[in-house]
Length: 157
Image 1 (spheres, one colour):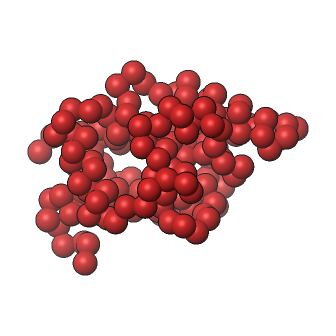
Image 2: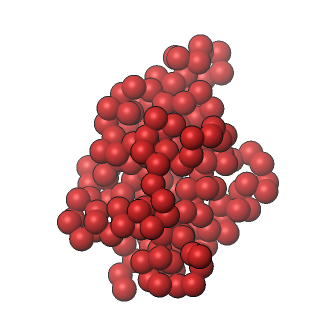
């Protein structure tokens, strides 16, 4: 089966070693099934207000999008999907040739409205709030789980 691409564009670098190790773990597993690119854009300037930082980070996220990307924005106001539903979404995007799934994760202050407006889909990982670093790890695990579901690999129970 072809290694179909997925993009992740995230604000900031992961600072906690255990979170980075977890992300690396799932990135390594996913690379057998997907060409996955992870791009980190710089955090907003610390001297700015929270709102100004969100705007600056939003501009950086949108600038990092490629023309064929289908933006799927992780946002607390988004739709919650089960793991099988995420697998189905990825399959539909591929089957219908809708573009390259591109997941965007904002920084510690959230996302600008411009990023939300650009999204083809708003996706919530949970009704709980996670750090943007932990959200990245959870998303990578869920992408791996979705690939296992699609390939009938015994990981999802």
